[in-house]
Image (cartoon, rainbow, N blue to C red; front, side, top):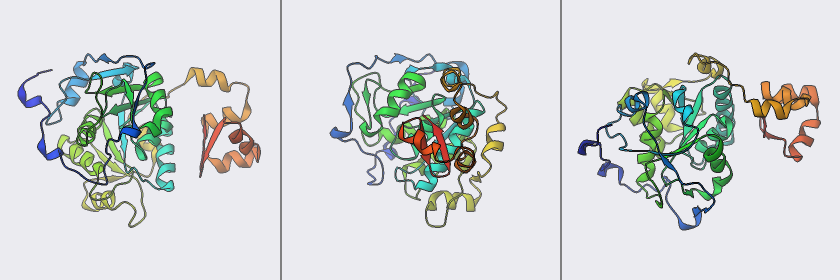
Length: 302
């Protein structure tokens, strides 16, 4: 990829302070000596072409994990750090549906919508981080982020020893969008970092989708849908099938669930009502034992 000056990321418009955006804090990050050192990513022609849709593509990327995920259809799911429980459940259901149909979910590893998107899609997920990959940020998401490093794919513009600065988060957003084939904004206020992702998608002509939201709870996406800049996404399975991929089979998960009727059922159907009608209070016993997580209308195998 060209390394001319016009590819250098020096956009002063992104250097603004918004109290609603993420911000680095010393007690929210830590370095782990057990983390492997990230390697430099060799960009394929396909990935380089995707990133060149951005006005300011990254000069280089560093990675940990499974780079084969980059050759799959990729959907970005982003949104508010303070998303509602309703939105959380929608994100978990959508990301699980995309995973089921072989689509990879990409997001930014942040608190809120991002981490739920990763959680529902593991191991078919890509995390783009504003810090270097020899540290964890934010520390609240340590468990899922370590799983992304190990089982999914983690990307960063920084080789090592880089703590995120306020404008790094917006810079990260452009990479999340640039690598995607479609962008879903789950929930966003009009003045939010997620709306910057919408602007990146519009500029790069990447299809933009929003989830059904109640009035007053996601004014940013509701506005974009009303203006016709964003399509409403309410049929998750049809959306997943539109990418024309083969169903994803997690062989290790399939092996561990074999012989357990409840886990086998939930691997194919995460609807709580259907599962409860069949297995009753046994579901709650599985939750106590740490085998499943019940999130409102959905049940996920852990």
